[in-house]
Image 1: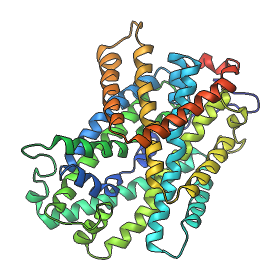
Image 2: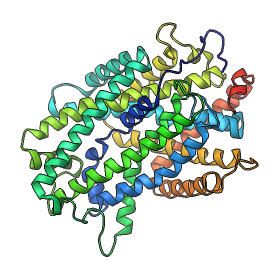
Image 3: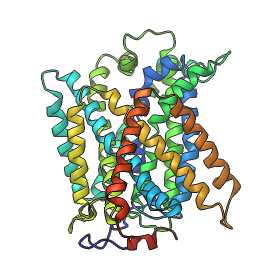
Image 4: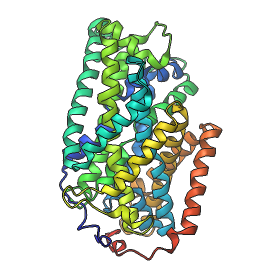
Length: 443
């Protein structure tokens, strides 16, 4: 795959299956249900495990489409590359532009969450100080290459699994095995479907991250796309099983209890199961380890999307420059880091605002992905009815249902980003010459 002048020979394929699994799990975060435990429990009327299992099922259609396309288009641009190959340059640009809304703002959102958590522990320190310090650390780790990030991801994932397993084990001991696995978090008669679906709409967002594994197509040793596709599906499957089991036990621990704040319910549950020391300990763990686990890989993913778009002239070509020693897209990384810093500082007191934009970018990007699968295989002799027709159509229906449940502000702000993308295309991107790398998009 060709690079632009001055960009170097390209990203080096070094990662194997387990590196990809670690990256994906790090981005999803095995302990993610803890942070939304009370919110989902309240919305779903206690049926928290059912909501998470349904959330995993909903995302399975999108994961399948990703696994299909990574075998067809091996490109660091992920959705950008898929849409360019299947639908043309304009769709490719718009796909990359919309998924950038997700990838650019998730680090900002995570930095703010970390700063809020640390602010609860040390209220005298301004959130802006935490944001700058945390962002500087994640940039330093990513600067030295994807392998150094993989090592940190592995430590983070193992730590999160251990902490969540400790809470689940304590819940089983506290409640007894029979009560710990009672059907209360997974079934009720009658079933409050509206509440369960409301809980699922929150849970779906906890699974976001498996998609970013596709941005490592050019960092993967196996260039056939098979390993990458298996890793995407495995990450989602592991997360679904882990989320379902952990919320089943912890959901039973919440039965019959009142929480002053649903947003902080997981701290109350930890204190109840393990003792008073567990509350501040979990707060520190969430603020540092969980936050870094999300910020580090997403910083990698967004830099690679911008790298691919810069290589193709869709954004300034400087974004395609690779560091001569560490083989990282350093210009793209510094630019996106700077944007994350500005956004995080500007909206450090507006978490809801950032979250709505992230959700809109991810879901509209996923919708375009399903269209890519349907169109790419519409006249192919390899067309499979289940994988290439039924799965993307059902995936589109699921995304449409979630988008209709979004607030007006989320849709308005997301459409504003869409309009900015259209303006950029009209002004600059559409006039870029066809890149040599187009030859490598579809294989």
